[in-house]
Image (cartoon, rainbow, N blue to C red):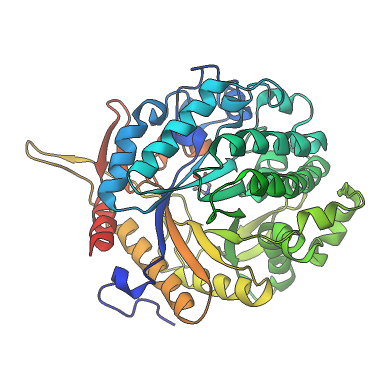
Length: 452
Ligand code: IFM
């Protein structure tokens, strides 16, 4: 099936109330790492540990969004976004993770939210996008059950302050990545490589989500506010005839490990042999975790074609290279049909009330072309990628999938975790030495699309 059927996608193909956004995350863009009372997070510690991040990069300055947020909101308005998805830095609000509140941190997000609303852009806030306060890591981090309760406490503080203005609340962003890369392969902060810790972390992330949801709801006074979680997905298909079982395990570990508990109140059966003995489930946990959500946030980037174990202990897989397919600069296969199929699968199997695509985008090795008259980035690959995925989303929507919005990852080039600044996902180029923002061709296209 080819999903590219129209010569030009137009905004009016989508419902009038569709949410059009772009997404970022605190540690990836804010900088100001030691400013106004912010405490260290696991990512500060990890990125300052030698050998962990490409080129020795860190988020100390990043896109300096903390100081430039007004310009960035103006940029969003210029593009025509009606929503912006950002995350809140827990250690800016509670420098020790619990207890003492840092008012200056709350003030920053309050100013950001006001600025967004003044520009008619709806704020979609994520409470946790991977930057756990280091002080909590020192108490065991997500492998410690208490962290779930600390997360609910943090949710109370941010929602009391912002609950009158934030439209969309997301508890976690991609907890599966925290589980797998943060606690099993060790490629991400806090850099742990242990299955037991990883599975415990997964359960406590879910429990934290479940405990935070009613708190967020209780403190929100916007009648149209909505509450959910964002998970990462990839479209998994067996890479050859012998890999069917392997693909089932990979799909469960990377796609349904969080979906099943959230929507069915159980962990995926396909993983029971691997995870069951490590799961620290206490009576009542699964009911807390599976309370109804207003939306499921879907982050989708690529397809994988597993053919063999890469490292069975780390639950990583070798994938077949798909000759002739388009791969982005980060080595991910562009496969828009995967988005279409996953949206249908979630709709029929899990029945979320609605879904947002909370992230979708591509890394390309962009070049800034500078002449005396202009600055431009001709990112043809990203442009094609975005159009094809949007078209795939539209097909699903037209066939009855309750899709309510689309957020591009990302508004800005930013700190791409272990890759540092080497991988660029933005529709806006960030010239880091000068912090100039230059809308790439993909951003110009999104702007024109949104203005028609
Ligand atoms: O940059 C990340 C983001 O933080 C979470 N989702 C995937 C993006 C691209 O890797």
